[in-house]
Image 1 (cartoon, helix red, strand yellow):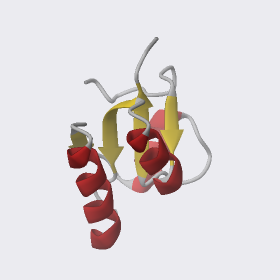
Image 2 (tube, one colour):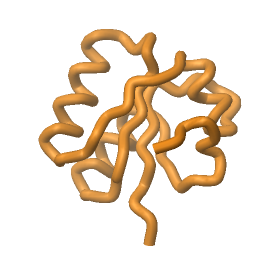
Image 3 (tube, one colour):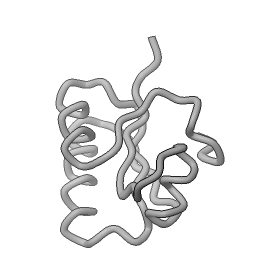
Length: 83
């Protein structure tokens, strides 16, 4: 998946939303910031693995937010399944 521009994709941002959508089977890929805290990272990776969703570890929180077109930092982003 090309993560150079995520602004046009349907997505959820933040731990609560990503975990919720993962449990509902609505996420196709999770993108995790390289500077995420270890506990946060483990929680996201465990939930993604339990739901068979790949995790891409890329970018810092600030850069991930820029790629998503949002103003605040983004530690985790879930790309929603299309359709």
